[in-house]
Structures are given as structure tokens and as C-alpha cells.
Image (cartoon, rainbow, N blue to C red):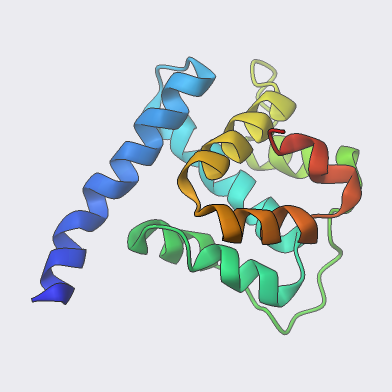
Length: 140
């Protein structure tokens, strides 16, 4: 029964995250909000050490967790976005270089969303593992 419950709850959980992010960004286009969430989560995931990326992923709702891990190869050597500009560039690229989107604002909104929805202990670990140049995106 727990598995059925988790499956039935999966879509409403992601909908809640998207609605929250939509309000934070003050956007109307849900597809753009979805894309902003996923590209920012992927950029964050890839900037964290492997184990911390896994711990953070485990805190996400089940459906969002699957999207977070989509395309990830933890054993692959990825050039991590350790600088602020590289991180923002990755988000901008993922959002198709839309000139109407401020990638830093997107990062701020997604990090704030995570800060409110991820348990405090896990959040502190994620913050500590985030490269120092990116920590300013976490709300204080």
C-alpha cells in the first residue's frame, strides 16, 4: 500500500514544488518553470561531490528525484561548475539562452525553494558541500 500511496502522491508533490517556484519567479509559463527547476537542480547536483549529490537527491519527492538523477553518470568525470559564472552559464544554457530570463534569479529561487523544503540537517550538509563560489545562492 505504501508504494501505491507514493505513486499517487508523486505528481501532486511535484506540482506543489512547481507552483511554489512559479510564485517565487513570478512567471506564468509552467513549462519554463519546470525547465528552470530541472536545469538548476542538475547544475547543483553536478557541482556537489558524488555522495552529497546522492544525499540531496534522496530528500526530493520521488518523482522529482527521478528527474534529478536523469542523465547523471556518477562515475563520469564532469567538469564541475565551481565558479559562479560557470554555474550561471550552465543554467542560462539549459534555459536556451532566453534573454528574458535572469539565470541568477532562477538559481536564487531554486536554492530558496530547496532551503524551505529539504530537512534542515540535510540542507546544512548540502550547503557545506556546495563550492564556496556558489554558496551565496543559499539563503542565509
